Amino acid sequence: MSDLDVHSRLLNPHKCIVCETPLINRRQHSKTCISRCRTQLYRQKKENSVLVKFRLPLNVYTNLVIAVMSAGKGVDEHLQELLKREHA
Ligand SMILES: [Zn+2]
Image (cartoon, rainbow, N blue to C red):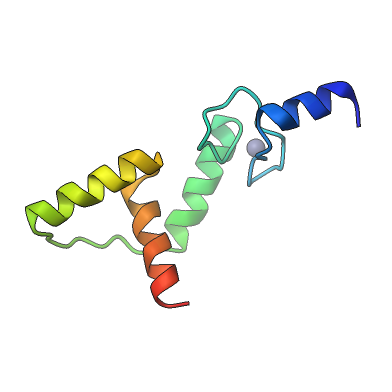
């Protein structure tokens, strides 16, 4: 492993989940490297999912948005993780 590899791993140990390229100089919660990988991932997710529309009480929604923002995630990602934990 070169010094550069070690350095980039220390900076950001994450890899693109599509092509496994180490993610350098990307924001902390990035999962993919370039827009092509992002698009590919989005398309995969879209094909294997359904769009759900539902109503929440305002205070529940507000708490949800605060939790999501502080975790630096998307609402859908956050809910999926909660549901996975619930039904694991
Ligand atoms: Zn990639």
